[in-house]
Image (cartoon, rainbow, N blue to C red; front, top):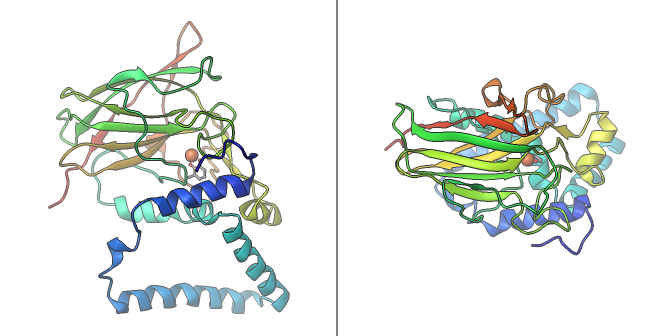
Length: 285
Ligand code: MBD
Ligand code: FE
């Protein structure tokens, strides 16, 4: 899956993201028992929304053929994970987490990789010597919704100061800026990392073609990705953002919520300190 010998193209990062998705357990297993009636309903409504759009806006054969070519290109560029996570996942996440009492979550996106190096409760995120970017010291704890501290795990992954993710861009060590932090019974963690850059989705592939043709922009605000888990509790997937980022209000992936914006405090040495923890909902049974 390494893209180390390739260049930073949409096709290379798309191929890595597509391979990553296939690598995980079969997505079909969880829906094996879905009744025909539900498949029929969902498929018919999606198709019907497309038909309505064509009628309402008098879509031509030339436009239909351009759409066909573009959809084929999304697949050839391996950009289905990117396309779906950028333009669809946020609504699925809203629906899935509507009943939660604990911390807000956000979308996972296409660049999570499981089994990142385990670093304990108080450590640096794996990074290169002299990794560029403002150093961050992040302290927090994992608790249950009622405030009880939890022994659990914070998995953290994020882009570097150039906006690139390890394993999805060339020339970056495999586990750079990816790690797993396991807390003791007090739930506390302390993580040192660097502030990531705003992220521009690849512009040279099919998704970039849509963005250019529609006159959109390709930016996501700078963000930290986390997956937080503890026994007996629902897994929390979230992203954390930095105040003042111009794209917090117009994230291409629609994944910013006010509760997810950090309040870093600048230190005399030029680093920033963050205090942010997670309250997990209990597992329903
Ligand atoms: C990202 O880094 C990301 O987090 C999402 C959701 C989509 C594309 C790139
Ligand atoms: Fe991301």
